[in-house]
Image (cartoon, rainbow, N blue to C red; front, side):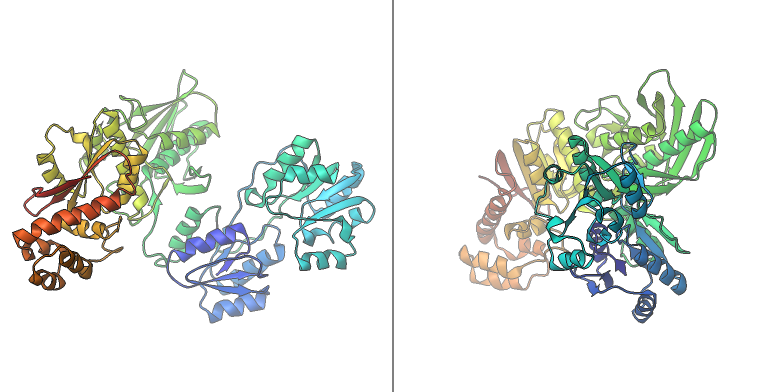
Length: 599
């Protein structure tokens, strides 16, 4: 059950909904709009008895506390219920910026009233919400004060019930500009809550700074801690916690990229070097800013260097690097920057196009940025970072590294830091890298094929085309062509086995069997429209597989049918590759290309 009503609650619901299993989403009010496929919405505040009894009755096995940080009563109820039921809690925390010294930090609203009184605030704009009107009564009863509230009947009624003058209410408007609101209020100070990045805290503070208006902020309260409680501050962390606490709720587990592993190992090594101590677990940030943690496999240090390693966990993705040890040796250096060195099992770049200079270790730009960011949080000194992956050289033989010019080991990869099992994201990242290399080596043509069999056939009819031009698209025909267009490829030769061709002809740019199945009626209607013999449509309707078309069509009909099929394929893929030369080729079961079409 998710306790929501916040941005974090909505994100939590989206994450949990992906599991395709039932869950509950509880909010105090009905204001938040939320659409889920598997969630059951509950509205109305729950006290300890109600939450406990509801959880028992509905076999709730995990609570996700994504409520507002100032909802102290609810946090206490969640903690007490979890302890009473002996079930775990995942607290979905907000991301909070560091507390700046130019803000007047207050321990409570009473403390804020006292400080504003002592410091002579004449006119206050309160941006802390209608529920804080009663808490600020000692100030607004004796001073000029405006409150910004939601433009809802219940908000106005709540304010008026406290005796607050309605004419001093300001209402949120769509696309409110904080700076304009503060300027028009003519206030000499604003009061807000430490509500984190998702609560718009920085926007309010920055607007006040630009206008020279003093900022008072009430610190977020210290929340109670359940007996079994973990924390996260983003969707990836939440999913991993659920995977750990409720095994099987998600059908497949997520994992970490080699880039995340290298980042965690490097940060652990620098902590060990700086503090001369063993590190057993380390926190690090993903490219989107979310904080994750990883266990440290080994750690050793001297006065000049430290070495730490982690074990790659790819979740349930069939990743050849799963289970490998990723090691980082961090040492002091004479230069002022952070230099990356190639260790055993990490590849070396030999071709352009991967975003890293030829001759450099195969550590992609995003992992490099992640590592630099984490090390600079600790020290501004110069360091050498040597990444190693024992067994990396052996495992690299089972990858496409050699094709894109990476030799002697694996690449340190990852744009998101997270491995989603069997995800299109990971596959298309690999396709994009290969297209970049094709373009960088100066090839004039990109040859897209579904796999090894079609590649072999296309090589036979593409004499003189360099090896880097041949790229597998798997099932993602449309996505691969869209990438080719985005990267400015001027000529594409697209190879299709018959199974993919019949799906593509019907307009399906993703040809995975989970997404689309063989449509015999479509093929039979096509044959009939082309004037094929009367027995063909009947034969098509009785086919088990698309490859049976090679058998059921006599040559005279085949010469009508297959070119027409390719014309439809061509028309559909032109939507995502609208410019440049495009040739669509059909590969048969003998690894030859009997039909092709060029518009």
